Image (cartoon, rainbow, N blue to C red; front, top):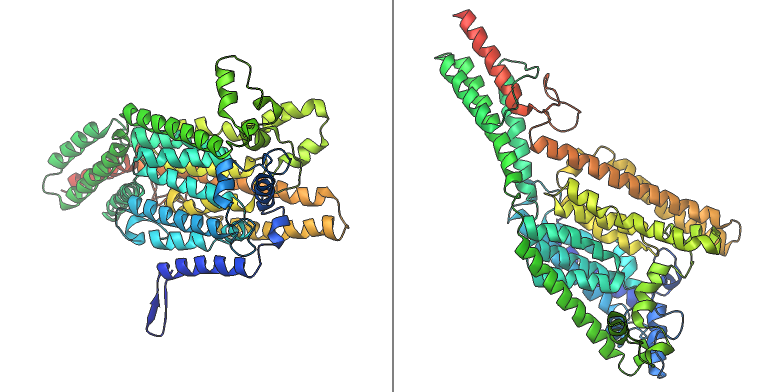
Length: 549
């Protein structure tokens, strides 16, 4: 992502700066006011209107949660106190949050690339280009100039992942707790973060190199004049190496057999290196996880205390007295019984799904059509869908915590009760990093991009037909949200299947260049891998050489 105008060369830093300036300019021009009412951008949880109402009630000496519109946590109100009501500066906190999130993303990508270029590390975008692409993401720009609280949550997510990749417990815990404080669903990232602290983050560059080495050795074996048809034993690196040595001794001075045997040895080394990547992560460091958990508890307690301190003039909205009474099985204070605490008004509101305002999610229409007696059960079922992804993904991909985090961000964007367009920004930004190998094998990229563009056009069109023109009904708009859910499912399934494919390639269980089910010249997709194929080729060449002699 670079270009030149005359003698001036424009790099990623230029585009990142231009993106920040574009956000500020759009906010100054008043482009965010229409977005305050758009269901794709604003929800009851992240609405700037709710923040403004809460701050206005504070000015009147009332609890911000005495009404029914404010669902932002107290510290979010404090952050927007000086700018929320200003017609020009209301987007300033979000603009700063986006810039910091891009900086965290750049640092995360640089850490995983280890200073290598995008081509050398196997990534589609370099760290600086990745940060610039995040800042120019249209959904991120809409969330920022719309004044929503989503950019704050995205910043916390990026900080948590950066801390996990760097194994920095205070930073990761702060990001996790802050994201949970703002949006609740980032709590699920605790699972991949724990894996990062216990095993370490995956090294995408080494995995790419192991796969390339295996494919290259197989190609050299095929170029030596043989066509392998499978075979070879899968008895481990030691057995394969010993067998290759015996074949090398029996080949004598036959140059063709020696070349094939050398190819088999190279393939054995490549497979041993690929398997060694997994062995390095077998030892789980529980002490690092315990340190991360302790910091998370400390940061969580600090946020609760600061929130109650901000609401010290309104004890009926404080949370800690209620939690203390609940923990000791005592009656809550008299002031606490007069109203709802901020925790119930923010996270409790999201869990109970009390508001059925239309949005781009799946909850509102289903719960509207249900009888009251069935709503609690189906609300629980809908919430559980976002939770059940964490354990299976962590168990199936224990060596890829960054991919697990990416998949959970995607699942949460689809299964939130009040999703918005800004929820797409984190997983879209992390895709070139977490799916560095998978995207190179993706065949349906054009279809997925076109589908997302089509949904982005049809969603506002159906909303206009229903609300503005009054020529349609809710089914028209909800059909687009259902298609968006299908889009999420397709992306998640494609990513999981491609990740399984890449792991099999790295482990030497699939022969070929990575697109077919068992590519390669006569290779089979079994467990023999390049070692078995190369060893079989060496045997055939040695036999042919003996006959020729």
